[in-house]
Image 1 (cartoon, rainbow over the protein chains, first blue to last red):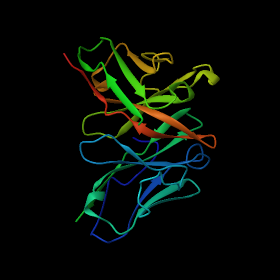
Image 2 (image 1 turned 60 degrees about the vertical axis):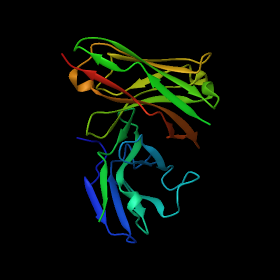
Image 3 (image 1 turned 90 degrees about the vertical axis):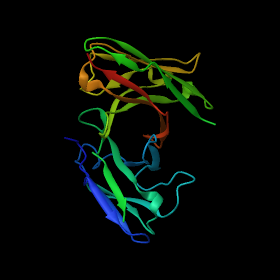
Length: 110
Length: 123
């Protein structure tokens, strides 16, 4: 059971906009920044969004992050087939003194 | 170019020990916190622990699942990070990634990941 809760799966058609939610608590998302990671099949995870809504260089602006209260969201607009991957949210938890990950969301491009 | 290369994985019996290494290059290793993150086969990501930098006296934190069994250390002179794993259990079977925890206005994110090394705990 992950401390951060994500839907196990999401899907969309090419060109569509999809969002992936990440729900936490006051000891993590509520007071700490959220990061998002993308893991393409058979590869190591890659930083996608940091500090709630910042994109590292090289990440397309189709990817965006937001946060409200104890929940965060990753939005992908103009969905492309190469976006098919697992997506994970993560944050530091002040009560547990650990980094906590969401269980991951498998995105399928139909 | 930042590179993180793990080594030391393999097959070990339950109760055994293993030491993983991570060779870092392309950045000033001593300035960064370094973490280990693992992924069991077909499962999600799980944070293992952290080594802070010299400024924070190389203090460490661990996930509850490995605390007391795993020890993270580092050698800034050789740009190396280590994970000593003792009393291994079958549930420790996973790919172990070395990651750089970059600071951004007081918070941290994992901006570089190694490809990982597979640890299999089985009799």
